[in-house]
Every structure is written in C-alpha cells, then in structure tokens.
View 1: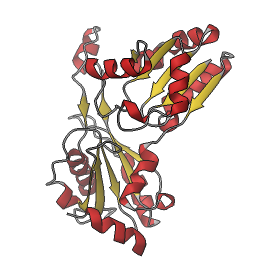
View 2 (view 1 turned 90 degrees about the horizontal axis):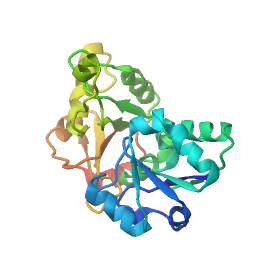
View 3 (view 1 turned 60 degrees about the vertical axis):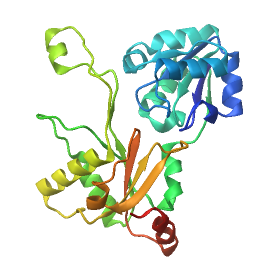
View 4 (view 1 turned 60 degrees about the horizontal axis):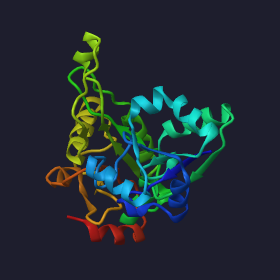
Length: 272
C-alpha cells in the first residue's frame, strides 16, 4: 500500500491523526522536498524532528528521486506499506497526481490522507475562495529566460473580476546550467522567491505588454509562512508591498479582483 499523506502548512504537529496512524504503520517513509517545505525547513534538524514524532527514519525525496526513480518507491509499496509525505495537501502539485497514476497502473493500492493547503489557507485574508480565477506560477527570471505566460491568465482573471493566486518559485537541488554543459551535475544553493521579487517581475512584464492588466496601484495581498505561528499577511498596492520585508519563506501573492463589502471589511485588518 502507498499512503500519500498531507502534512499541512506549519510544522510537524499539523499532520492529522489519520495521517500519523498511516505513517506509524509504514515500513518506509519518504518526504517530498521540492514543491514546498515546512516552517522549520527540510534540514537535518527538521528531519530529526519528524523522525522523533514518527519513531522511524524519514528519507528525503528530491525532484530527481520522485520524477526519475518513482518506480523504486512503487515497487517497495507492492509488498509493504510505504508513506510518501507531502507538505500541504497531496494534490497541490501535479507530480503527486502522476505518482498516483503510475501506482494504479502498476497495481499498487493507494490511500490519500488530505490536509490544509495554500489553496484554501489563503482564505484567512477574507477574500472568498469561490471568487478566485486560475492560479498562476511565477518562475525566477534569468538573463536569457523571462517567461510571461502568467500575464495572459492574470489579465483574463481581472477582466472577470476574479482574484489571482500567484505561487512563487522554489528552486531546490537544481543543477546549474554550467554543470549540465560539462556533463557533471552540480547543484545550485536553494532559493525561494520573495513577494518583492515577484512584484518586480510582474511589473516588468506589464511594462513589456502595456495592456494594463495591473499596475503599481493594483491591490494585492502578500502572505509569508502561511499556516505557521509567525505567518505574515499584508494587504496593499504593489508599490506598497515592494517596501515590506516579509522575512523567511515561503511567500505567495494574491492579486485582488473585484471585492464584496464583506471582503473589504476583512482586508482592512491587513492593510498597510
């Protein structure tokens, strides 16, 4: 049996009782460590915190392992119970859907234990979840790669008066371009996009297109460490949020659409 277990957003205590029961009966426990991270990070200390709670070793599963060596995990789940831990909810990233599809094709039984995700926790700011349009991802720009496919999606959402959740890039164990050219993988240090960088990139793309999808005066909400004890939520214009230090990762950003009076009332609590 393969158990795919959501860990929630904060720390090791956010796992559900059902999830903890599943982990404790599994022979092997993996934790996915590249689409998100818990508030304490995936460090040696962070892993030992999980291992102490679960009473067993936890294996770090990076992008390479999950996307290229998933069959090894699934073959283990053929004859024993294996847990695959995911920060947030198991279906917050397409990789985990792919894992379920591959498991089912190989005849491996799968059980999913859900948990809180950024997709619903953003409701804390008062913007109603059913008034959101398509979610977009904002990738880190490089000198030679400045993708802007998110622009059209934000523009479409705003024409419909809908809010837009922007998920910000996380780069964990990414091989450097130079090392790939040499044929020997060397990994860049982890990097997590800040709200400030995201807004700078958004404004750069607006300037490029010039179609007034949004501007420096567009209302937004910035979230840092959502679901943690020290979470930070600030509402203001893009210009205002550029001046805010949101601190440690993870960050995400919501571009506000048309608002209902009840939404406005809640947003006031978070305004600069």
